[in-house]
Amino acid sequence: MHVAILGTGLMGHSVAERLLETGHQVVVYNRTRGKAERLRSVGAVIASTPEEAIRSAACTLLLLADAQAIREVLRRPGVTRQLRNRTVIQMGTIGPRESQAVLKQVKAAGGDYLEAPVLGSKTEARNGSLLIMVGSTPSQFNRWAGLLRCLGASPGPRRIGSVGKAAALKLALNHLIAAEISALALSVGLVHREGVSVDAFMAILRESSLYAPSFDKKLPRFLKRDFANPNFSTRHLLKDVRLFLQEAEYRKLDTSSLRGLPRLLRKTITKGWGEDDYSALYNAVNPKR
Image (cartoon, rainbow, N blue to C red; front, side, top):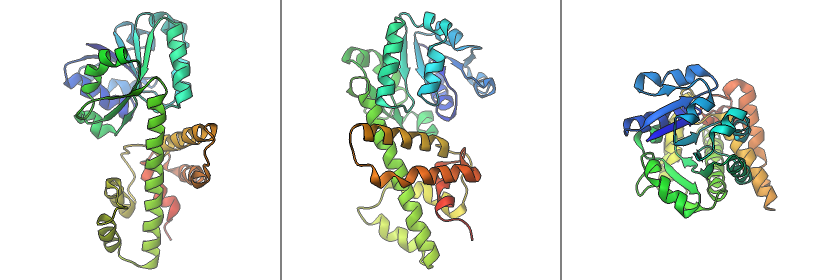
């Protein structure tokens, strides 16, 4: 199948690699062309414009930074003309109402739209073990599940409901990412400053119902203060936390427990760790003395 990918950042690059490995023909576009060029050596065709990428493919995957970037691409006159009778699958993290607005934009251009946000990062994308949530009609899901199955863990993609439902679920999950790791950072910071063994803390934590596997993934980064080569950046986590807050408040939920986290993430970014792994928030929670 001919697939276009718009956006070749951490996730887009890995998705392109996986689709190429599973026999698909892939054309990629990225605003910063150098990020796309790295995929030429593994068989991707590099498009000079999003119009060129969309024109050559039956299906276009959006792996752009946010809804604003999606709107800017889709409102280009050349892109609008190319969308007729083509399918767009949005795979990034955007708000449910933002996704529904993109649906209207694509449909107005004569195209078809569904959402398929994922849980996982570049490693899971490369080995085809992403958790894929789909917001679509049943017929859309049946048509595109095979393509998405190349990227997803068994038993494959899950249809959550109509467009907007999968986007909402993804925000709920990303809120837990932020909440769990910021909580771990604070606990490890206290243990460290009280002179308690981190090993003892973790040994008890692992035996309890409080434990989450992500704790052991991020703990080595905390202890080494090594946040390079990110799986997910601090800047992107802040964007997702803000989206969650907006949607939760729109739904009249009490978000008091989350209010401090955007400030913590902004502090982390101000200190220079915006493009590093989001576990760099540990440096803001427990600065070196």
